Amino acid sequence: MIQKQFIPNTYKNTIEKGSYTWSSPSNIALVKYWGKKEHQIPENPSISFTLDNCKTITTLSFVKKNTDNFSFDIFLDGEKKDDFKPKIETFFKRIENYLPFLKAYHFTIETSNTFPHSSGIASSASGMSALALCLMSIEKALNPDMSEAHFIKKASFLARLGSGSACRSLEGDLVVWGKHKQIDGSSDLFGIKYPFHVHENFKNYNDAILLVDKGEKQVSSTLGHNLMHNHPFAQERFKQAHDNLSNLIKILKTGDLKNFIDLVESEALTLHAMMMTSMPYFILMKPNTLEIINKIWSYRQDTGIPVCFTLDAGANVHVLYPEKHTEKVNQFIKNELVVYCQNGHYICDKIGFGAKQL
Ligand code: PMV
Image (cartoon, rainbow, N blue to C red; front, top):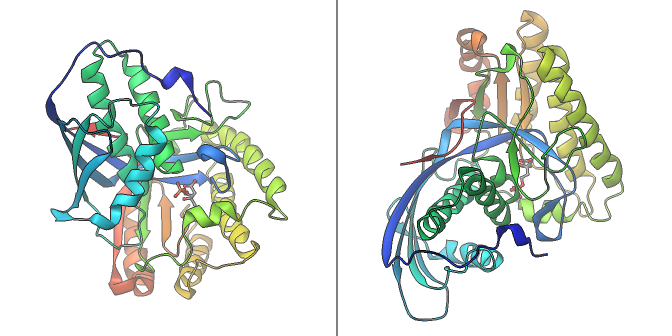
């Protein structure tokens, strides 16, 4: 599938060498993307909060060369990472049609994450979006007439080809990816800023990420997505995601915290239910994931504080709550949840507003 709108005309400028740096955040989905078609096209629309503190900072340096191949080195925290190369090479091959300069330069990719390495937090969303933005900065230098709107849309389009959910990391505070009938401009090809009114209750929401298991995932998300092909509940699930997004539009508008909690927790458990009912089946939650979920339910029942959880494709728990309850919820986390975190580790984050060029 070739998307003509993202194939550039001939470039105006020539550039010998240079360097760009972007910082790009992670995101946490409220309505989840799970299941994809060819070319990273999602089976259903998704929506996420952009995060603030959990981000990747990437510097891309480039210098002209004469050979006709992909040539790059990659460093994480200053250390050469040849094991990352196949993933980047696959990414470059996928986006070569859209960035014809890719073989004209040797690249040095220097990247670091603000969250601890091997924290179990996926760095693919922040990492791929940061790299896509750096590449777009080169294209913008080659073609300075490019509009801001095209820049960000194409960067999201490219990030999606690196890792699906990465296309939701460029802007904030809420991003939709995937065609949805009520959301004009929504697309399977890139993320867009959520276009509707959001009630005060959902401004500055907090997300405390409880690190239950920092190990490597037993099943990669690529494999998990693929298991949605021929999954007995797939079609119902995809339909449910559309309906949930419709309902969320109302919830976000009216500030309905009760229905927000029901929808978000149901989405998280449905995601994991899809994993458990795949063939082969698998479980990414750990005993402590369930301990935390039960504690959150009791605390909410006892205090009436609208705190809820969501999960991504792993054992860690994202604890979501409105900013005004920060003090009490932090105390609750310290008193009752930290014991379930590996080495007592958790990360306090909040809604953020997207990537920045440094
Ligand atoms: O972007 P991927 O291929 O790593 O998939 C991410 C899938 C979930 O995190 C489980 C859900 C989502 O929408 O982010």
